[in-house]
Image: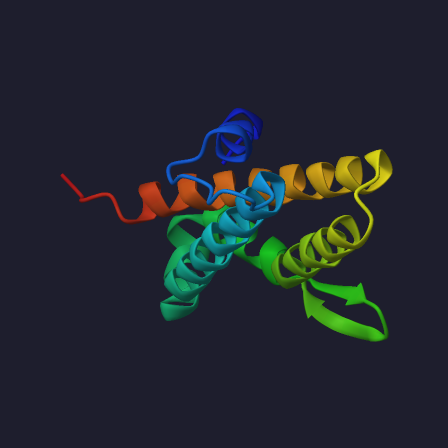
Length: 134
């Protein structure tokens, strides 16, 4: 999901936002759901046959390795990058819900944009690696 797709999700989305719900939070949660499913799919696809992907689609495999890269999160040092991105969005979402300031909303929007960029790349790879061979 690129920035335009992210903005579409954040502004319009596919589903209606219930009256009284914070649209920003709802769209953030939708982006988190898409991210979790998309990352899980591409990582499972790569994990199923890492050697084959490393040899035949090294860019895909390298991207999956980038998602898996151990990253610091709080006191933990070995959290996969894709999980850290999701946790950061969740942390910022909670901060935004606690105090709806411009700083909190901007930080959350930026974190969702970063997450969306990784999701967009993951979705592109999922289309490529699952395309039928002709």
